[in-house]
Image (cartoon, rainbow, N blue to C red; front, side):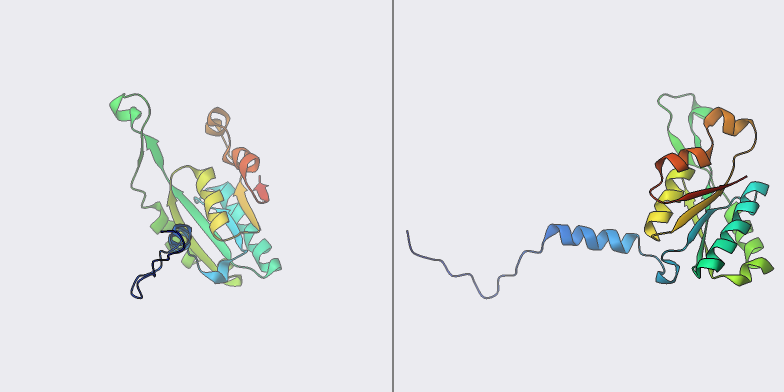
Length: 173
């Protein structure tokens, strides 16, 4: 039937571009408060080094006129500790520390200088800090240096983050 066109029915819907649906789903999943775009991400767990990192990040956010995204990454432990199975499987351990940290931060006078939010994540600290930095298009990530034997055995969070991050990483001793 050369030269003969079959007309499209008037009620036939156009097929949507599948990549646009994927992009829309990705944006809705990672939507964040636009007030904190290009802010400063800081890893915080209540330790002395993370308190120093928070103090530095507050000054950095204040000087740049941006928001502060405080990230607490909940513990994630291998199940092999309990089950002895191979390969290691990771499980999220309930961590109520974020609630305590949130209350402490809400009562802190030094945080009145900048707008801030507290983000809780679970998993690998380096990955989660970089992911939050990507979601908020952060200008920098600030972390405290790892103290003690744990950092020497497993590698410091700051060192691993500095090697893989797509934005500046500031390590506070």
